[in-house]
Length: 359
Length: 181
Image: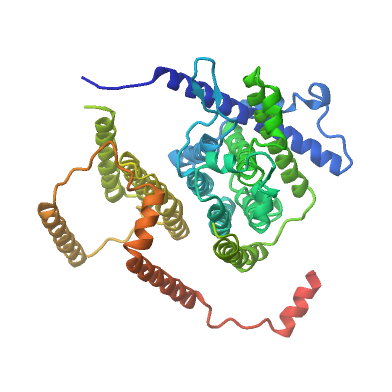
């Protein structure tokens, strides 16, 4: 009756890939919390977590256990269902974006089967990321509203208006990049940045779109609600933020989603601007490892992970260096500086493509 | 019945059920949530037609931006079923009549519509390259006119949103502010 033609091998392959990516992003997010505490400790001349395990490496596990064993509280006057939905949505949208990131080059097995290290190669890759980012607001907004607490509501409104304002500049800065690449598919964007040097110029998009990169980076700080733009969690004004009424693992989901978002957005930034899994002299490395092609794939994945970790460390250094902006300063920066700058960048890119490079 | 049909009927049922939920639920926040799910179901239909660009733009613009603003307003006004004012009978009657007229128009347009079925398998008119080419060649005039319309709406919003009685801070205020700095 049902004519379901399903490629079982493909499904198994994708399920394995998805679980590995899921576990990987959870693991990296876990150790990002440890890394953040260590980085802040080093920058403030402290030692940081050092009790659980060597160098405090078991600290994230201890934190997770603590959150699990805390009492689960749902406030009386909260809107029950939405109150629970909030952290779930935050987690869901955080994990969704990893589907379109190409984690490594295609691997061809001996039987000729092509294994792709990307969950879904859709031809609107970047827009999918954008969709997930714009939906990410709901977790914060619904959670803050359903808590029935003035501070939570204020904080979630701050988060939402901040996200909407910075999405505009982010989108315009991406348009300039897309005019160069001529495609929305992340896989094609990565393959265009092959190696490091091509046609007498750097092949990575960072060198072609430096202004676009700076705008994109600033906007992703704001979208992540990280310092210096962590206004929704501004404790001196709002007690704690939108997750004030949450306890136990629901709070854990909110805090964890932030670190997963940081990991994924680092992956996106690296993919868009720093060549993804490409690295200098990759052709000669590929040639040297021709006998074991799996080795080359692993090297590529490790290169990508290294770049992502450098990006995450950059996020942390900025957080512990710069003080928090004031809210009106944040809005002014978004609307009066970044959007006009992004528009000018788009115009210049268009003029250069049209008249100078004649694509 | 293949996977396409199964998805089609599932999405259609979801869209209709959630659209009913929008108008039937008492709590405005629930209505907004139902509307968001409806948009997702419609996006699913676009994906079935291989119009990925339209699908994702529908999600970004409607579910991601417009509904957030809806939610904003509803949250700030704190509408509840208890405080909702009861409408007069005249207003209810007017609502029924105008709704009925709209229903009639939709019915008439469905009756006269051509029932051409799309080829399920090989359509890529909705992909971004084709859509862009059509928009910027065949339909470039309507496209530009609609963008002018958006620009004028934006300027209108700025004019309305501008405060008319914004005074520069007085000397006393400034002195007070300096104390804090």
